[in-house]
Length: 307
Image (cartoon, rainbow, N blue to C red; front, side, top):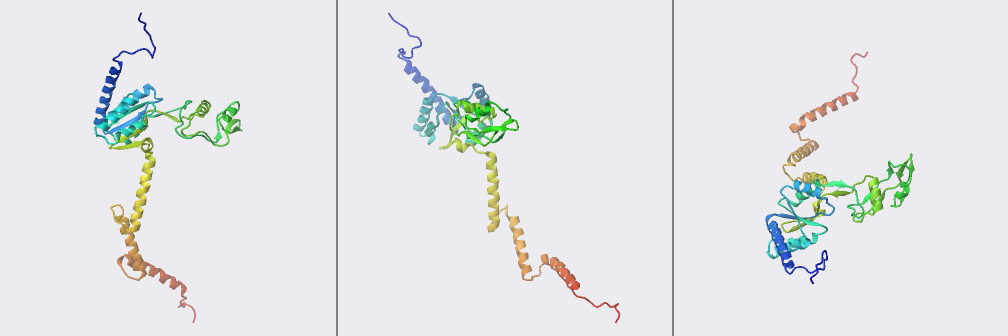
């Protein structure tokens, strides 16, 4: 008598099961290889903790970019296949970035523009227990809106020193309740929420991007554009000042250099008493002032005084 087993993972699978799975994977790998050949940039993103509704909105915002989800093993086989073909040097090294719930994103935009698009489409969210802190989370010192009560012991349980000031709870000293990279404990998550701190971001998490044989990790790609512009402006100002100091003529320094040279030439002429048109008016004015001063110092006889 034959027996059937339902829902038993150890049940015997059909003989052609492995072949069917292999064909399915082969098609997925071939499809990925075509995409890798068609786009100049491929990035690894992590979809962990990303709600499906948010993912759908991101698909619309990404425009001509393509995002593909599959198994890590399929991604790795596709990257290895490209390596064997001799194209896209160093692309297989991207496999080490396939962490969490990875997906591949394909685009012809630069990795930095891609990172900017992804960052613009993120939104803030409260911390949940078990999540990893993206940075040091600090509770600042100062007054709060909390009324006195059991919350003092709740704050103390996570290392926050607090007391009552003016009828409200006040944090006495700043407290780092979780460090970057640490898992957020349930009690810590509750306290963070009470202070209305939203340290997490909902959106695609860019892990790394590949272009022309170079792999850029997320730290390189997460450029603060405002800080970058400030640094660039400061560097340009310092370079201009140095060029003026050493007398290096450029379209940006020539006017300043001519003005500087004119002032220096005028100073030399004045020092050696060389009369030049630029000094004539100044010297005449100076001579007049000196004559007036001398006249004031000399007492001339009064012609009307009795002899």
